[in-house]
Image (cartoon, rainbow over the protein chains, first blue to last red):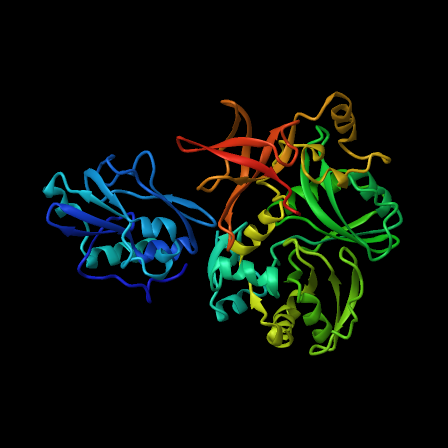
Length: 137
Length: 358
């Protein structure tokens, strides 16, 4: 019921249908959540950090931990790729409200991309924008 | 089915409300942010559209007898212009709903049931209506504007000619300056703060809303959405019908057992008498997390590895960054200071039962 005009969609990133963004740096991905996600969650108050060393599966929820919570609801974080979680951004864990202010400047975790072929399955900015628009209506 | 628009829907759109469907109504979750709106009501004054709530008018020679038999509160001894928070039960003693009722005159009452339960409550009231009691479901005819916060009284004194000296949980007719009209105003609310709830016929709702904002400007008045309405009520441990009770608890199991007066007959009373004699199985509590995390509806509460309760509501208290939960635990584990655990995914997080009014 709200529209996506006014939301930022950087064109140098790749996207999941579940509203994560990924920046690919060699065989490492830097992952965060999109403004569409932060806008719909409203006030983000808590980040349940993923666990370093866990093995994620592409397009699946991070297990056993990994969620973004607003005052109203909790939403799981999905993984854009299969591979090991390498690093967590402690700065965002300690101040999750930074995601409301700048969700593209504040990454959540870094992961190893175990299968480079998976990169092609992510959405580029155009299709992701269309997808977000469709979810809005 | 498209959600119903309240008489104030246009105001929310105009003021930039982020609109959602709630209980079949088109209402704002927030305008700026839930945290900002929460803090506004705790420290200043905010305005809610609660027109989705129901309105019953009950009158006639036997109105007092009818209500005294349905409601857990002692209606016969209500003073004129007084409000009471009350439950009403089915014959199994389970809470059907909670509401606030006003005694406008000796045989004339005005009650506000919960939006999602209007139909159910109406049927329940009709089932126990005595001859000589007239009931009108006027839920679609009234808007309710809630002006809440420590500065609410300042706004009402400017917007109306009324001195606003009545105590909390009383009501009166107030004359609104801009409209030159008189409406029923309750001194009540669902935020844990001082406040007023204005019963306004649909056709005047927008004009009253505008007038309240005009006079409230100097006090920093803001519109408040459903998000902050929920965090405000949770922080003060106020029950949410359909979530904190839903045909699975008696009044004695809640934290508002004071709304049951045992010195009169009412539907469901024998079950409560049985609980008083044989013991109350569970008790509603508020708890704080002693570690990171947020409790959510449906999570389980443990003591020494054994399940002892469940969470019915939870949030992180805006601005305070405290994980707060409401729920039921085994009787005896409910006193303030009791230390238990809540399971969040695979983690057992320590919690402590707290006094939300402290």
